[in-house]
Length: 177
Image (cartoon, rainbow, N blue to C red):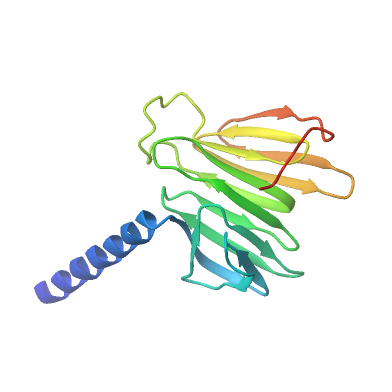
């Protein structure tokens, strides 16, 4: 029994060390569940299929196909589910500042942790979600955002916590990059 506990602790330590190693190399999220077609485009690389256990770098664009989805675990333990026919850009995900995710099309359901990162002012948002027509600041929240790129409409459902949402003029210089 004691030997099994030692093995478990060793495995957990190695897993955590590997997670930190990837995070140091600019990898900020890991696919923990995927179904169907899930692709990633990282800076300087071509589009590639991605699956469970694969890491995603800051600056990468993640896209799902028809009848597909991906569940992503970020280094701060926040989780995001990217729905079918959806696309998001992990614009920034620093350890000491708020992250920025751009939802370019489709549906994103997120459970954002509250105090895991090293953000000093805990009253500020720790993650910003943006679409072409809206910007949202979140911290410790379970919510869903839908963005229809055809009619340029953004909708928000908050399950728990608080999301601050502001309208953006779609004719402004929005850039998913």
